[in-house]
Image (cartoon, rainbow, N blue to C red; front, top):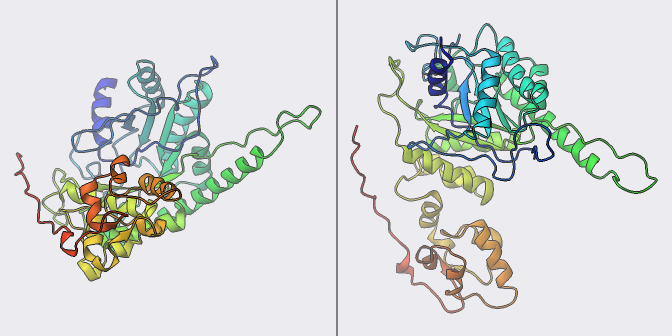
Length: 417
C-alpha cells in the first residue's frame, strides 16, 4: 500500500482521539545549530476541525488493526473498515518531512493492539527513540500508551515523550465492562499510578539539580540536568454519551483521577456513531454542547475551586444545563451567595462570580489594596460587565434582587444532516 493511502486511513482513524493538548512540555530548540525542531517560541500551532478536534500535530495511528472489540470504537476487531499499518521508519520519515515543510510541530501517535500490548508499546517507543536519538528531533511528542504494557516500556516511553496518556475510556467501571470487556479498568489505573510515581520522581530530581551551584569559580562541577520524564505530565480521555453515565458521574470520575493520579488533563470526547454499531450503543451522538459544558465544568474544578458535586450532582438531576455555562448555572441556583462585595470578598468567593476569571480576580485584589473598586473599573478588566453586575456590590453599585438573570433555553438551529 502506498504511504499516502496509509496516511489517509490512519490519520482518519486517529481523529476520534481528543487528548492531544501539548502544554507543559520541556523546552527544546535547535537555535544552537544542533538538532531539528523546537517546541517553544511559537509553540505548537494548533488548528481545529469544525467539530472542535485538534488536527495540528501529525496525529496518526501506527495501525488501526486491533485485537480488541470495544463496541464504541471504529477500529474494533469486528469493524468493517480498511486496515493499514505504518512501519516504524515510515512514521519517522513522515514526521521529519512534515516538520521540515512547516506543516506540523510535533507528533501524536497512538495504535490499535497488535500481537500483544508489549509488542505494540515497543513499536511506539521505538518511533520516539529514533526521532530523539537518531534524528535529534526536538519537537513535541505525545504517545498514547498501552495500559497492559510492561512497566519498563512505560518508563522508556516517558524518556522520549513530552506527554503520555492512557485512556480511561468510560466514566464508570460498569460502562467499561459492558462496552469494552477486554479492557481492564484496574490495569488502566495501575499504569496511571506508575506514571504518576515516575513523573513526580523526575520532577523531584530536576528540583534537586536546579539547586546545585553552576558557575562559582573553584566550585565542584555542576550536576548534570536530571533526565526528563514525560515533562508535560499524563492525560486521559473519556467518551461521553456512549453509556448511560450522567454528567455527575463523569465529573466525579474526573475529580478522582485528578486527585489520585495528578493528571494534567481529562479530555472529553462526545461519542460518534460508527458504522455497523452494536445495539448497545445509542443511535445518535450526544450534543456537542454537552462536551463543551463538561470542559467548562472541568475548568471550574481545576482552577476555580469548585467540587464536582457542586457543579452537577444526582440531587440536581445529574446533568449540566446546556443553555447556560456551569458557573452561571451554579450562581442562579445559589442566590443566597450573592451579591458578592468586590471590595471585601475573599478570592475564593470572587472566583464564583459569573464573568470573573482568574486573571480578573487577581487584578481586582491588587486594585482594591489602593482604593475602593467601582463598577466602571470592571470595564478596564475586559470582563463581560453586564454579566457580572447583577452578582456584585461595588462602591457605586448595588444590584436589585430582581436583576438576577433568568435564562431561557437558547434557540437551536436544526441540523443540516
